[in-house]
Image (spheres, rainbow, N blue to C red):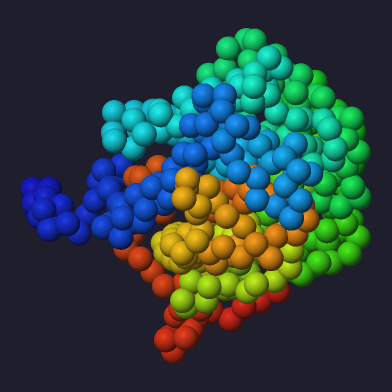
Length: 410
């Protein structure tokens, strides 16, 4: 017995055994987490600070093909999308670490922002029901609430909660398109059901059933009945499907089976996404809304956050890949204007890449790549040293797994 104790003690001293729960990030993991937090807060600062002062509409630029047209919707776009990506990190809550104190700052900014955005008497009261676009961004705001119920909803006072619910309900006048927009309506209703027990289950059910019909195979859905070569499976479709079904999966055995099925499909899509990242940290310029930049990898980040990555993909290779992509794009000259606001483009400032529905606020969907920050610094995701992702290994001549299509038995 003494011999065993001595051996364990020696191993612990040599660093070959780590006590569960006592692990800390590898140097690479620590640096990459700090970089991602610094980048996310850099993106967030101009918007959240202005909104906390009720000065967002006064100070936020509106870069767009038709700035006047987008000026009525861009503020909710920016706020909802930014919070959706920040929410898992915020939900970790404040603590006595430097990061925990920083989170406290942004939790407070976000909560004040929700209050100001939904108060009809506020100068920054946002448009939730005029035109079609507000439904989209009400849904992203709801995505944030569902991802951080304790730190966002939980820190709102009663008046702000009532204002928020009223603002969300007001978006019901907007008829969603017969495509991914059904999920915007469903996400709003899922949040209303979660927080106010007033969700419209018909809108939720219709969105889920429609997307099940639009599944094209091998982890990919159509955007409506037709397949589109773009990143909307990641921007919208698969994350919102997963999260809406997270709210309903315990209602019936069939809902649980559906949740398991769509999660497995999302896992397959994450595997595809991981392979799309080149050895240099670039990825294909395919489809519309490419100005959302690295928000294109929301599904990969989401599956890592859920600890639902494919078995042959390690957390550290996803971490290294996402970090490399984010760093490559965010550091491109011209990505930010002089006041720190994002500018339209894929790599730097490329205004011609903005469709007629793209404006400054739209660009904050890039924050969805940061979902992995919802994994605490002590999580395995941040512990191990960097590992090359699939394409990086393959182009070094190293062994990689053969890719296989996903098959389903129905």
